[in-house]
Amino acid sequence: MSSNTLKQRILVCGGGNGAHCLSTLAASQKKSEVHVLTLFQDEAERWTKLLEDSDVKLTITDLDGSQRELFAKPTLITKDSEIAMAGVQIIFLVVPAFAHAQYFTAIAPHLQPNTLIVGLPGQAGFEFQCRSILGNKASTCTIASLESLPWACRILEFGRHAQILGAKESLGISYIKGKSCKLPFPEVESIQEILGKKPIIEKIQNYIAINLMAKSMVHPPMLYGKWGDWDGKPLQKEPLFYQGIDERQAGLLSKVSDELLATGKMLEELKEGIDMSQVIHIFDWYKTYYTDQITDKSCLMMAMRTNSAYDGLVHPMIKTEEGYIPNFNHRYTTEDIPYGLVVMKGIAEIAGVDTPVMDEIIAWAQQKLGQEYIVGSKLSGKDVDTARAPQSYGLKTVDELFDT
Image (tube, rainbow, N blue to C red):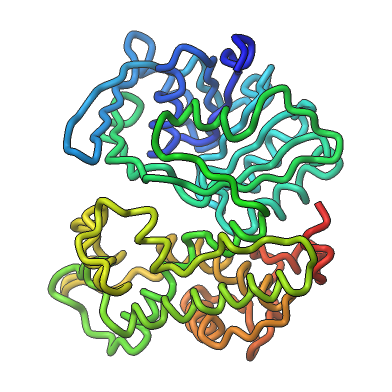
């Protein structure tokens, strides 16, 4: 890459765990000028004040247990989208899926041609929503989506100290290049340089494949398997989430994955020249992406139980005087249904693939959310348009799905 390519102006959207880590990581390389746009309350003002006389400390814990520290800070942290967007070439959205529309709307008036927009992660339906909100400007940009965050991470002290807890081995990316977009830099290599050596960014041939591989498909089957027949009695302690998985939960997750695999294969049959081979079973995904963290790869249940990346993570719960009850208003349902399973169901419906297990889980979850996405086995509920299914954006045929 040329010296000009190395001095890109990057915008990180968000002020949470991932945004703290990404903005500091990018700024530490001294090869990019980093802006941060956070629209949440007075977050930009508070963060700016905290950094008047100091850098952000980023502690990176590698898989071998060793630690290193980086010190850097963004050039600019603001709530003003026009100021934030000045001269920006790469935009990372590092916010929950429910906030994507707010950021797309904020950046759209100031978006310049030949900009790369990256969902980190995009989550299912990212591209549909982005193209819809950007309108004609979408044809001048490249829209990319990574299948998950590159690492586990957390804020230790807001605005001052964040931690990366080990990067994944590899991470899939797909992108749609607008018909009149001419990026002056390579997509994958530029993102890789910002993230560092790990995870290794691997291109997935088409964006529908990455929608079917979104990790939002993991949480709803596990919640349904755990709480679908719950008797309403509080628990005395918070149950482990991934490492507490049982055969029923693993079976539901595996069957949802089977339905997504069937959808990918059907799309290959219906659309010539489409490669969906990178839509893999969730068990194979775990063995590939958590190679060093899993000690028992004998089956999906044991792979998740013995994944050290999940040590101590519990179900989303609410503490009451009687004990703990499940929190169904956690992002595992509020996000992973409308910006996850409902999107995947929409793609499967277009492909003509039956999804009885996915349907059962969505039907249960929509009751908890007070929404209606599915009626019987059809995505025809009154709240479909609030989700990111392709049907919400007028896409109803296989050709329309792939007409980028």
